[in-house]
Length: 102
Image (cartoon, rainbow, N blue to C red; front, side, top):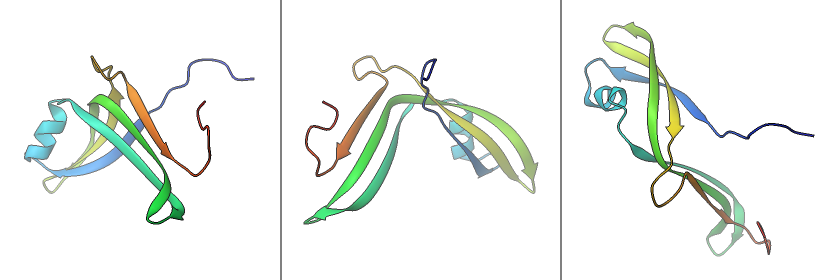
């Protein structure tokens, strides 16, 4: 038996040129939409099994873990936030099975 709340999280390591626009945007914790797409085997006629997960509003939590020769290495956590009209997350599944999620 499982207990507690389930949590989805996404983290990654990235490298940036020190002082770059991309690093500044990341550090400013700008809002955006996070999308993860998985594509599986072909169903038929160009259609594939798949899953798309959309975090409707996200920001970043960052920590610099290194800086060498003008390149900054940053650990990044993507933090989902509730969007006013779209909620936190939506998922779309493409499959040849009937009644998935019902």
